[in-house]
Image (cartoon, rainbow over all chains, first blue to last red; front, side, top):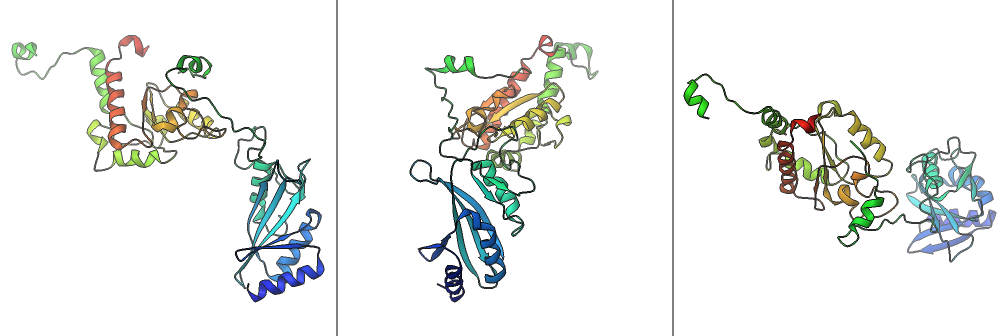
Length: 170
Length: 160
């Protein structure tokens, strides 16, 4: 563990209620969802984590409550260290404050998380769908979202599927 | 051919209108320049020196749908891309043909999920399906030649 990361973690542990996890030299900090803005602002301004590499989410649907984790991958250019910040969100009307004002790169990433997981980022200036079509219903990366499987057409069920298949006219 | 011998060297050949038109259509069939996924690499290889589709008058890929006769759907079509592909097809002037190149364009291939169209025939009428993942350039050329055969069989009735 680098000296800078060690100092950062001891200092943020002194000021906040955080859990820290270590896995193969990568450090993860869990923070409550209400504090995410102030916490990331503190990391950016006082601990030089100046780049938000990615904002993603994980859906731990049947086995875990709260079901969503929103994950911020931070990187510090001056010290060359990485830190993962996680926050747990309830699946019932999932909401989180936007960090778009702190890291402007989070703008599109939060849109993507909103698109695929349906997590609303309050205060986001332009929260539209990012990868799915605009009139899409549902959020596909949720674990309870159906895959949209279509039956494969073989010779024995060819006619049956052919009837229901949409066919365009010239 | 009997006519030439009787009429001498006048540079005249008689044929039917259908044959003349279909000959001109098959020998300068310009595909549209677009690729959607990895099949496009094989399509480029079919165009390039080794396989050389210009043997069939198809060396010219048109970037504009207004100037192309043939749409080679090379790759998977996502549901978000589908309206775009249909729009491109609508912008092509008739007569126009479609080749579904590869498994994904033909039937969805390995991508049986919500995001990918299960066969491009759901949005545009397809003339020839080329199997393969991706098909080799020979496969595509075979598909093109199959289409040429189909076009050569068209009659005046089909043009109306």
